[in-house]
Image 1: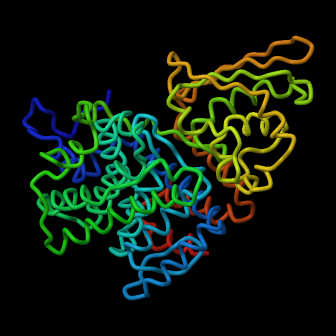
Image 2: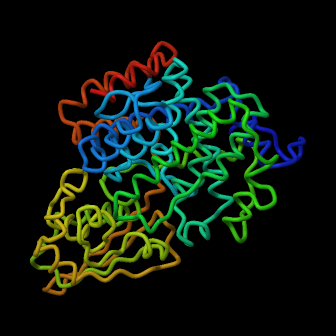
Image 3: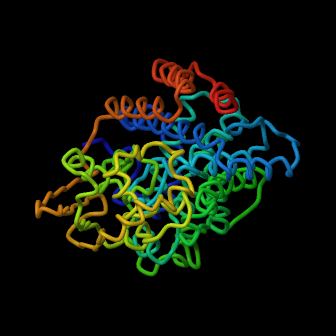
Length: 449
């Protein structure tokens, strides 16, 4: 078990907000090496998603928005573009990197960490001329803080309709950006309080361009809160956990706050190897394991069992657009059994949503919620016309070491980016070898290309 470097209730941290502030200032020497290694995996995975998403329709629109904001103090790089002011660049990069819905997920936090936090951290790192080491470390503390707040808000917050990538994620973005900006404790307290009145994001946006914008808003809110706090704007003593603060107004029955790093949760971060909602991945992996035995034409019916919470997230029965396909069990099941490569982001087009073969197969698929399954598990039974029954079960929670994950993410880069993967993977090797020697601006140059 890792030693707890952040104080616990027993050694005199009175309030959760104090623990978040202390977490933001955690010395590098006290950041667990395996957590920083995983944070580097997250950096590479985030860059893949952003570079790949830079040509998506929402990317064009959000860059146009940034251009309309003007170029005063435009010092931060944007995916597929040039530069923008830090706050705007964070919004653009968060939105673009979530456009393909191909980024990491933390099921305990109930959201995507990298797309809300790394854009804020990179914006501040470029503005402050920080190193990749400072960037990665800031992401780690921001992610850990977002997870802890996400747990406090709990599933009830998510099930009510809030998108925790944007709500809890905004606080992670604030912690990361504030660390790089070297806010003192009072300024960090103010920044978190200011974030509390800005953090927002709704699940009703799923299947539209508003979903990736939620990630951009989280990143933008984090940078804005830090910049305002640095200028001396005040906020409540505790705008997060205090009376009428964010938790009280957004969670009916808050879960207990986690103190200390002995119960560190960032190591449970999960990575996507299919360009769709993470709630579909257990089914996809399970069906891939039996797909070689199946001719889709011979399928009589498919019964998919999943955790009930996913039924409100990714159970669209008749998706109308490529974006909606990313939230459809019935469509993804047919895609897997048809041999389509679900890791290809460009596959999810409006034409795919109108595919008659997938539409016919969708009518053979039954999805049911099973509360005995965790939100990372899936199982099902496939019945062929000759009566043969094939079953599958998959659990995404099976641990994978960071080094193996980096290899899989490198493979994802080659699949998604083709020749554009080479400079990214070369950058990853430089960061892994000596993160102190790599300026954040080099990463910025990479994403502008």
